[in-house]
Image (cartoon, rainbow, N blue to C red; front, side, top):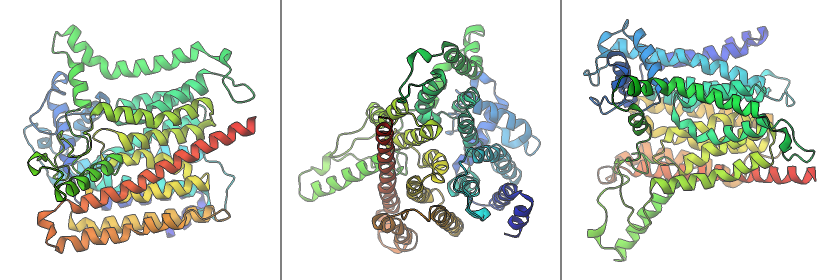
Length: 533
């Protein structure tokens, strides 16, 4: 706080916030790290020691390279720094290799790459409407947004404890959003195209980018009622956007095409795409992401138990593979119809279509784009195939920008972020990290709620009684899962129960937030239409 006071006097409060969270990240270096640590070490070894033609074929380790080419080149560049720390980490056959120097290098590489995220947050803060400006620094929307993004609990534990490189990727996304707010459309399109070739999960929000750029950039004018002026369509702008996407894609995939056409080697692109989209994996991850399919699976379990009790089902016909056993392969549901990748794709498309229509027919500027982007991310999380629980951050971070603008969005953000962050708890299952994750989440949640309540203190309460009751229920759930269940006899027979309870309980909150945001978007579109008429 002393540093913040000094920074306030000099106008460098943002630097103080960034420095503070960087120091916290350094303190988290010795903590537990997941298998993702070995995943990225293996990718360093693959890209450093093997020719490009073998990057997407190498399978010595089970943690094969399954990110797009730009991320592979990113690992390649990192590997040439890593060799000065510990050459042994770059040996493909050194499976599960970990040394103190390897740990330091990989941890500091994540921290260093977060510089892009910090810059992107600063750019996003410039786009925030300053109408709600409090007398105190801590009541200013830009300050609140900076804390919500820079100190985001989910990003901290996923990147700097669990271990991943999400920070700089979200930095690219936030920077592209900022550029669209600043009407620098070509830069925004370029940054998003680059992002897609770093990590393909951002395809979730690609429809929002495509429709917004076509509607707001390629059509240069609207009619007085807000509808499209078709004669304003610019072929030059469409070609410019297409050229940007083509050049970025060519830079990413071109080397793999060249290997096939000019070196007469194996056709690389089918192999690359088979790694990027592994549909042989199951509907859900080992730990169910808290989405619609978690509720679907839980209902199937309940119905199967009831069916067995009432002797409606034959025990010999019950599938052996259990969704709660940690398996991620394909399996059959017991009572409800089994779900295919095509079914999830159809559900996802149906879920995002209303938001896309609103963005096209009733555009509300960059803010409308941001709400559509968040809905695309949430809809894909809700109905996607083999969704990871970490993907909830793709909705939480852009929703942070909306939260400081309107009380309604702040309410949705608080429900989404509190529930979504709690759903990440099972990622850190070791005892030493238990107090860390509880303390960090409590601090972030208390700050989020108190700061947004202060910001919108002149408006109606952010939560109704039902929402308050639900959020408070996370406390007893945590006590039950972490402090009661381990001492019961069920721990051996039903070890999956804590994960099941966490996933299903959080799925209810995230589904509610998704539905509430959708209702808000549709109502705002209807109101906008009425006003124009």
